[in-house]
Length: 171
Image 1 (cartoon, rainbow, N blue to C red):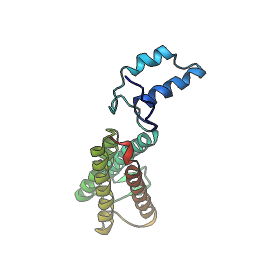
Image 2 (cartoon, helix red, strand yellow):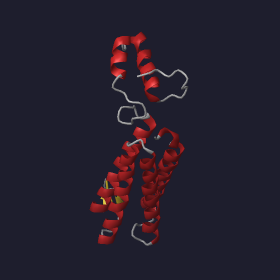
Image 3 (cartoon, rainbow, N blue to C red):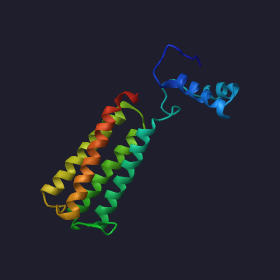
Image 4 (cartoon, helix red, strand yellow):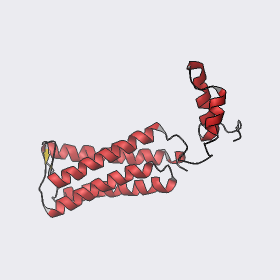
């Protein structure tokens, strides 16, 4: 592996090596340990590269929120706070929307542009599905239910914009 000091971007194996070496002053890696470890890091390989913390957090939240939507779709309520009509159409729509959310979260972890693009498509489908469920009356839009659907839609939109904003972090 060759250290590229001309690359000033905070990414790639050169950056990871220098970052690991910076821990040396605080009982971190010795130089030999760092050199041995960096031999296993391939340039521009997302499997050996550290994922940005913000994208990992967003991915985990999307996965959890999607699973919560699936549970809500199957049971008709979430933590005994929200309740919805339990028809087959509602169940299929809600579990599909929750699946889109979770799949988008997993796609982000690929750290590939195609994964980010598909994640955005799935999130847009999630948002469109939420609007459709409210407009068709499948999801009641009153009281706490209205607040939850608005909050959930805003969060999904924020995640969509965050992924688009982080586009350069994907390879």
